[in-house]
Image (cartoon, rainbow, N blue to C red):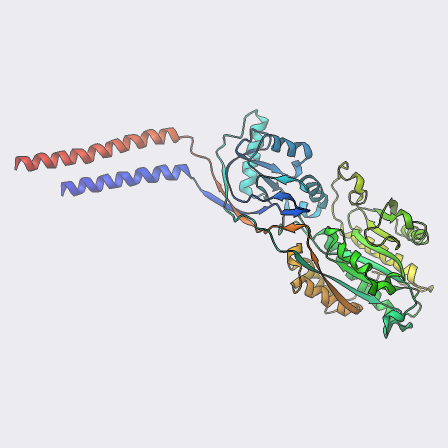
Length: 507
């Protein structure tokens, strides 16, 4: 009985010792979703971040970063700070997005982030995530240490991500959509190619190629242009049904290759079978960026600027009525067709002056719903003043109407799923809603399948970030106490065996 009691006593002491040490080494474990930077190959050159897993101590980006994960807020991500992180040989980067609602409106924060990170090759993991209360506490603790002249590198926080290494994906198979609105008095309704009226082509895009796929930072900029296209198409479909005094036909085209230089649109425009339409195009209007600023930039190809002069006069006269100002920017070449006047509508000069992109410091501008509606109405009024051969006053956007197709389809298209390029292939939910909208509000709706062979994307998926809190500051005390306990256990066990051997000998 005495021996059993001693053995039980030893077991209990050993268990308590092990549990006490483990509990104090890992106080708690916290998890949150994290998103890896996109990896891709363009012309056989690798860009982005292909590394996925990490198990690193974390430190503030301004501290010593050798073999550590650099923690930085999106608002602090500048060219100098990024170079500082890379020069200090950090083993990983985690970008914290501090305020979800604010960043969903500050689209230029993401433009600046793209400018800094795109076309760079990283040999370390680069991640982004929302700033949770735990991460905010860690980051603000680092900043407090910085303000006090202390280092955060020995804080002991450890970040762990276990994720599959990305693999090269197959070439992307995407789809473009287009449809017509034509004068009811022309022969176009029965045979489109016999129409003698010129066409105005309205182009928008819906493909998203963000650096951090599936990271929900609001409605993509391209989707805002696409929703404007649907709004215009719906409103003008009523006009073309009701009024015969039309000077131009409209061609609405939704592209899935803006991030690839509109290569599918350029291919469509240069196909011989489409020459009857392209040879009869008055001009192409591209909705690039809308809804953030009152100043509008119209990019025009210099070689056809003279042909676009009459068009620009209409834009100027209409802008005065909307209290908008615009600037004409001349470019050397057209991304679509060298002989067709093309006007690119944007309110962000960062996307216009391509030659100066690396030098421009993008100012933060918020998406403004009122400005967005004003832009859509302004574009509609410009088109109306161009195509409508009558003194009747038809204001696009002045009369809203509700139907069973538009609102549900647009909402599903914008918010139903990610519009990242790998999610908008043939048969996707977004493409089904787009097809439904074109069928409802245009004539002869069609789709074009095309393949993007370069760049080649690597697979991606969101992962789980595990955060272990710091090791207890009383670790030395625990080690000393644990050593004493182990010695006591060993002494108890061996002294028990010695007593049992002596009792047996005496017997």
